[in-house]
Image (tube, rainbow, N blue to C red):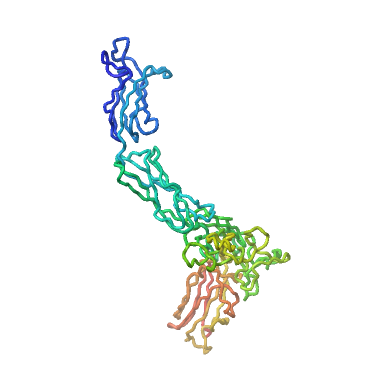
Length: 569
């Protein structure tokens, strides 16, 4: 196998159409198969297999239009394309009997020169993280290093290998730095810059620069920004919210309420994705945790089991539970349920000099260990009863010492100056926490009373629209409709009130009871419960006065109560 035939045959040579290629260029390569026993005449009727290879092709820097060819005509051709190769490349054709590819019958080689690539562009490709943790923080979900990838290509958009690229940062606040200031592209034309975090909350980008083919002209690009943040929850940026505050769940199991945690850090940025928030509930079932994405996550609370207040029922054992009180009714506040959400974080401070760290003398907060305060509405209640003979509320024992610790006198966090650390601050984190309170209202249950009002004092109204008792139905006035469920709790979500009049012009508060636990001001007197909804109803004669009607429909729509008031004439 070689070039030519007969007297011009040159064994072991390849016929290369163009031996000097531009970067990314292509050329055709030909070999002839001859019969040495027949004057080097070209083979025309016998089948042979020819394979193709080159130094650059084996490194992924060149390609052939095909890997092999089977021929009976005595010639083998292939198209070679440089895809990153530069300098000398050696091409090899191997000849085989197609029935025995273990033995090479003949080899032909040739060389070509590929010109260096003309640098076309450098571009930003990707980063393994768009945010990194401040260097003083050990954060399980935020790294302290970010790797950013850039790619150098030639004018044909082929990758350029072994090309030097230098890096710089747009911002070095807090000691931000690069692991290397310069690196070299790999066979894919890619090069990686590594950003190392500093001690300040900031944003930076990487500038990547390489030189054009002339070795003088710089070609530059910039990465997407990388954020340097705490990624750790901050107390005043942590909140949990229940979607429904008065579900019809006291007498119905399986009612679901969505509970969402919103979690930010000291700089009001969302915490790092993957932050875990734990939950516990006074009653029912609740998912034990959720994992944040974009600064929030949700769990489902489901009504079941014991309901707060049922220890007042003789059918239940005395469990020494801590409950909120319905002060007016003199009973437990039936159905009032506390949900606690918490995660590891820091207490919060006022950064008066804007250096991103707590310094000695700056204002800070500190907190005791988190508690699920099951009587949270009782301002006079003790937060935690540690008497072995009394009720005990759940608390998150952050330091696992089997007791609820009070707030320390030092800052609980991570962002401290060296002087602050020397003074004992930032020795540990804490559990940031928040509480949601819902009222498990009785479904399809409506109780009511009518009242007149003077300031914050309410007096039962008998419903007689003849207010001045003159036996003439010509009075105008107003009264209040107070509604609860059968336990003296706010009526279930979705419960509505409508009003109307026959011979009366009636204007009143109407609509749903609202998404609320229905706690009323402590200054209100005369009502039969500390919880519920008040609707003011005003009436005036319009024609021949006959009646005023009020219609209450339960949230599930399965129970309707109509109240009709008439003048006693």
